[in-house]
Length: 251
Image 1 (cartoon, one colour):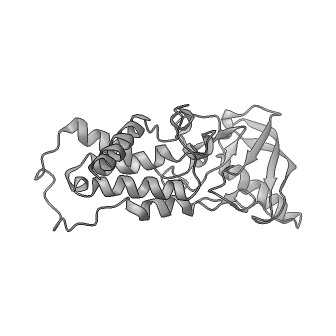
Image 2 (image 1 turned 135 degrees about the vertical axis):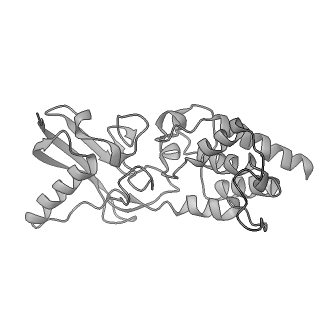
């Protein structure tokens, strides 16, 4: 039997990056617990449009936990109170009838607010552009078994590649560090033969760009790992540190 709840939403509203933002309160009644969090925001926006009010701006795309666009701080947690899910995979069954839900954008200097709950995460794109790729000519597409890679290493590389670049790690970190994101992108290439040729240059370039963009330093509080919707391990940060130090020693 479908269950519905009544909720109160405290949503951050901000006209643009330079404007002063504030919370606005909205009440929604009869929200099905089978509704996803983004569907609930859609319902709220339909209500606001009907009332001739400005709808709430928020990012979304695939709504399948793949793209990482649906990045929201919900009741003090990136992507909400559920574990290992993105905001679009969060359902209203995780909230209680009569509950007040606070919704905010990422609070990070490197991710300035565009409007309301939308932030500019171009900083992550710039880090990838600095070195998160393989530029050498690897030829045509080889047979899957042509390059022998031990399964544990292949699995670890795939675990790192699961990172969707949503920004939850940096948003959760008290220092605003992007180390988990950078380390995942470095790991997925450093573990594979195709990525080893440029490994030293990659680690130096991506760390330098991260520092340039104003992200903080890692102090191993593990908040990033705890809030990551893809359960990326901080063991990748250790690998990034090794890659970076080896590159500096070679210099």
